[in-house]
Length: 86
Image (cartoon, rainbow, N blue to C red):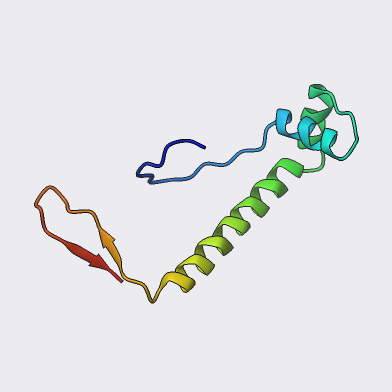
């Protein structure tokens, strides 16, 4: 796992290499060319992107809902003022 740091965005991707690995896990062989063709057939890449975005949105909403009762202490800014996010 990479080191934790302040992030302003999260980028997720599924590559042809991931597809070949997933295929192996279910006992199917898939070449890189086949994986690329799979991604680009019938709008699959866009459909996958939409589902990933929906899953991310759902995760964020559930997490915010769960954590909404717990105040979050923000790190002090350059002006050294403390802030509290609720």
